[in-house]
Length: 60
Image 1: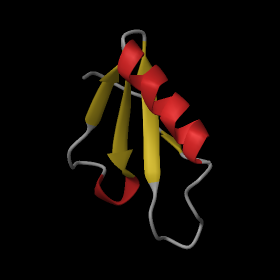
Image 2 (image 1 turned 45 degrees about the vertical axis):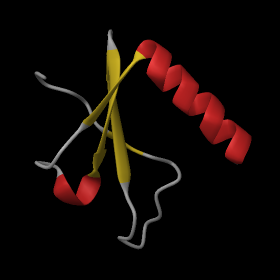
Image 3 (image 1 turned 135 degrees about the horizontal axis):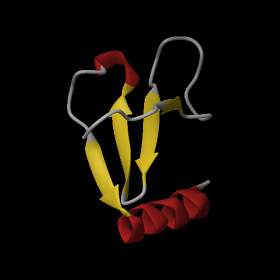
């Protein structure tokens, strides 16, 4: 996966609860639990990430 630059989601709270981080490369978006940085990573191709964003926007 190489070196990715991770960003904490603006929807993640500062109280240490549910925290999601996202990193992007030219081909995909990567999502992980910030509390388990060495844990599993979800990888979305460009079409999958676009569909996820549309669904997230619809659900508010």
